[in-house]
Amino acid sequence: MWILSYLPSRYTSLTGSNDGTTSSTSSYNVTFKLTGQIILLQIFYYFTAIVSFYITSMLLGWNFELSWIWSWRIITLENSLGLTLMFLWLLNALFSVILITFIIGRSKLVWDFALTIHFINLVIVWFTSGFPKNIYWWLLQCVSLILMMILGIYTTRWIELRDTFFDQPHDIELGNINK
Image (cartoon, rainbow, N blue to C red; front, side, top):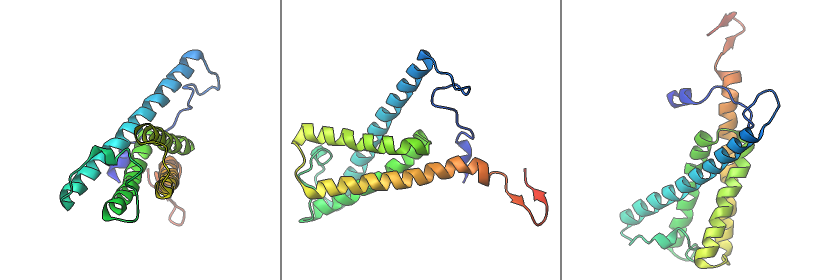
């Protein structure tokens, strides 16, 4: 795929040095970078949710409400709005996998970032509409988290291993090496 050619071909250590030494400056830079990535992912997580919720509500003739994003009360199987929002949250998890793949790019960090996104979402929902008491909301968050982790690990590992196994295919039978 042409878009994958723009990804970095090699990965450096998180400390910024490849000789195993660390310094306070490099650990500060790592902390700053990780915090920035968390904030960026959280912003994109809510931005893609708002856009997909808005477009769907306009297509279905509903009045869009921003409270749909931060409320656990409307996630239910009893009406079409609840079912639609559940589907859209899962779709948002797929968008988040793409963002995690391109922003984070490391399979070792996918668990951390997926859990952080959902934990921050829990805190915001708890702050805005009270502690979630709806089992469907909790199940939706668990499925979304599992989806983000499995697909995120798969896509980031594929990109990490692309350099090793896919960039220089060898044809053993013909003795050709494509460079």
